[in-house]
Length: 312
Image 1 (cartoon, rainbow, N blue to C red):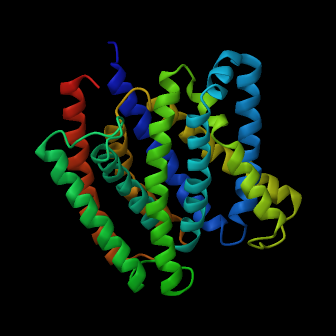
Image 2 (cartoon, one colour; image 1 turned 30 degrees about the vertical axis):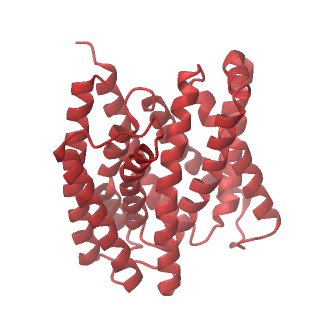
Image 3 (cartoon, rainbow, N blue to C red; image 1 turned 45 degrees about the vertical axis):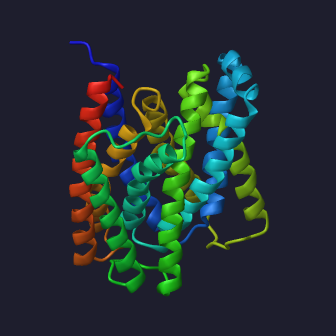
């Protein structure tokens, strides 16, 4: 049986959600003792060398197309600087499930806002089910933001200001990640493949994190070289596959469909962080996730129906 393009896009996106959930929990614990900027510089630096080097050596035509489109290339690079910095800092400050949920829930809402502002990759709500689902998502992430600031969740690094900053950064992460998807779609349509886009959107971020490391912007505990190498390898394995899967899915389904599906992962993160044991169980967080997941399921069903009817 042949799998349709849209179905394969859904499968790849769901695989991305599972792997990214494990990534959030791991990073949330790691960044209590290691600078996220040092981590970002090492892991994404290696990633840039591998993917950009591979593109130049084996897909030179795609590299030439990418550098001939400086607007899209600059947009995905600046988006990566904002979204990775926001994400790595937010997951350090608040409960990983909160960061994941607010960031993911922001994405379909951002896609709709982009449509309202005339961006061609944005889309309207295609049916009442999708609209209702996204409204519930909004209520869910608003509830999660409130309980985080009030200190009712399982973890906040230090006080209300840190909680508020963690929430704000999660929203910023969701908005700018959606923008990255928009410009990645444009690059894909111009002939630049997923692996090329994945590498070419990172150089400015690597330079920025390297600069922060040089300034010792966020000092971290000293680590032996073997321990540091271990975390870099694990970080690479948890970062590259989900990003690649998502990049493969980008040209297969619409931004709004993709955004709705990536909103389905909070319970995976919540379960993993309880298993890890660093974050306390929080009934308030579970209530917020439950509100959110109802909206996410409704929005995803509505989005898949809309995509099937339109052939997206």
